[in-house]
Length: 169
Image (cartoon, rainbow, N blue to C red; front, side, top):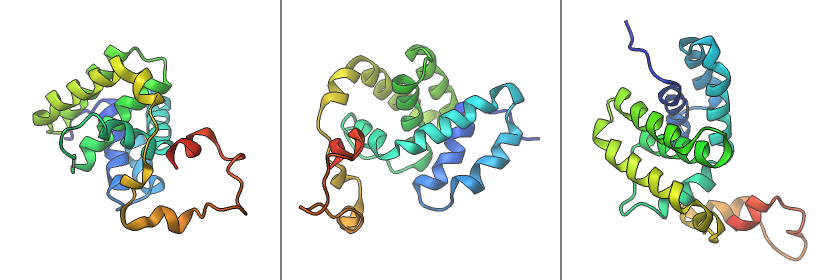
């Protein structure tokens, strides 16, 4: 019998394989949706797709709050889920942080609970300042992959790009 996980724990399980480039959402999310109570499936989908959509942005934000890099993909996913909830949902920050920390405990990551709590609380307090800072996406993408994907030059006007992309480049 598998233990019942909260929605954030399920979302982290869906996102962790994507973070480590081992799977896609189309393969990780459906089995987890069946384990989620029907009333929470909309929230699960919102957390997973919303976090995935802005993954690099959330990684850049949390990286600026960490003293050492985090290597565990489930912990990275929980940090991103927590930031997504604080920035993009109507879930109160204290509830988002508490449920995200509880998810870590449910995923046998209790040793990271203090880190998650501290980083997410600090993010909640400093979000206006952090979100206004220019971010360097090149530190998040290994081996110059960004330059292979995006060629910036006179022939490619950046005025039509979404604001998030403009801020990251």
